[in-house]
Amino acid sequence: MTPTSFALLILSTTIFIAAASSAKTWALSSNSLVWLALTLVLYTIGNLIMLRLIRDVGMASALSLSAVVQLVAVNAVALFFFGEKVTAMQGAGLVLAVLAVALISLPLGE
Image (cartoon, rainbow, N blue to C red; front, side, top):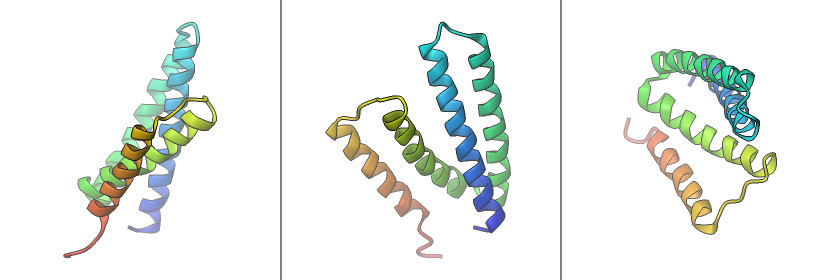
């Protein structure tokens, strides 16, 4: 992965975290259209960046890496900023998901 692709991955993840936080804020608010519109705009921008990443590194790599980075980042935001809880079973699932994506992303056999 080139430095540009890595930067795009970080940028898209940051935007997706902002979008998820905006969606949670919308859900907790009185259904404010401002939060809904912001959520839609952020998800659109994040997906446009992902299209560039797919072109640069391939669909499997881009989406796998993005999924695991977002999985960890969004769960951290949910836990630490919104006070959500994760059961032991859900925690085990998160660990297994990270492990699965790591195995998929390894360049072995190339």
